[in-house]
Amino acid sequence: MPENRIMLDVLKGEAVFPPPLWMMRQAGRYLPEYRETRRRAGSFLDLCYSPDLAVEVTLQPIERFGFDASILFSDILVVPHALGRDVRFEEGRGPLLTPILATEIAALDGETFHVNLEPVYETVRRLRAKLPDETTLIGFCGAPWTVATYMIAGHGTPDQAPARLFAYREPAAFLQLLKLLADHSAAYLIRQIEAGADVVQIFDSWSGVLDDVSFEAFCVRPVAEIVRQVRAVHPDVPIIGFPKGAGTHYLSYRQKTGVTGLGLDWTVPLTTAKELQHGGAVQGNLDPLRLVAGGKALADGIDAILKALGNGPLIFNLGHGITPETPIAHVEAMLKLVRSAS
Image (cartoon, rainbow, N blue to C red; front, side, top):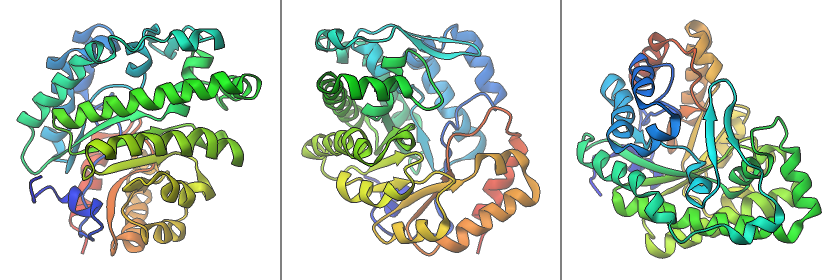
């Protein structure tokens, strides 16, 4: 891989200052150019599955801001969609699926999985050809637990009670679902790497709602299996794990999954983040609402992170995705503050 992609140096454990910077959901509704492309696409899934449009929106924040990394524009729910489940997105409601039953899990159809996802792989190929050589390209998938929560409830819920109850009442079926999702997610990441992704990230957005035993079984083990399968084919490609809300489980998550980099949400104390950094690169963890607020709140948040973590391997990012109401001027201010730090 090219030596000028500084995010890759950080993921090898090197301290680079100022640190490389990108944002989760950096191609999104806060950008007027994204909103225009989204309008032309029709549906959200049509946008995800159109290489022309997906490349266009993925490149928009790179062209505007020059981030150090570009993340494939897609969605974590293309995996169940490619397995034959209905997935649709409605304005104001988010993703909607027909809830899966325990008796339907064995019938999930992986025969045309990669055929269904070929537009995503084509998007990755085109992105690597179009991106500046120094820009790291990130592929991604949702973690099995988080994807399963949507498949079971049929929509997002505040505490994922439907999935938790399903796991308690139908433990064998639930573990079957997690295993199936882990296997297909690993295959999906491997194909993204083969298409040109430099790094892959696994998003576990709902890991923070589980008790100790469930966290180990539903978050750690499936992600460890994905890491194992990807490393068996591409041993040198970095893998970032982002178990949002993991709290005191972050350390064991890193140790047991074997991820290269650890994405931290904004609630992780910087003293804890510093300790986690001893085990390798960390990514994060500015509160997205500091970016919305701007001014002193933004400057103080950035300063605290750089002072605490700037001497070690750090990828500067938000502690979750950028919100649609974020002013573009505040993103520009963040870039200037980080890149002019000394």
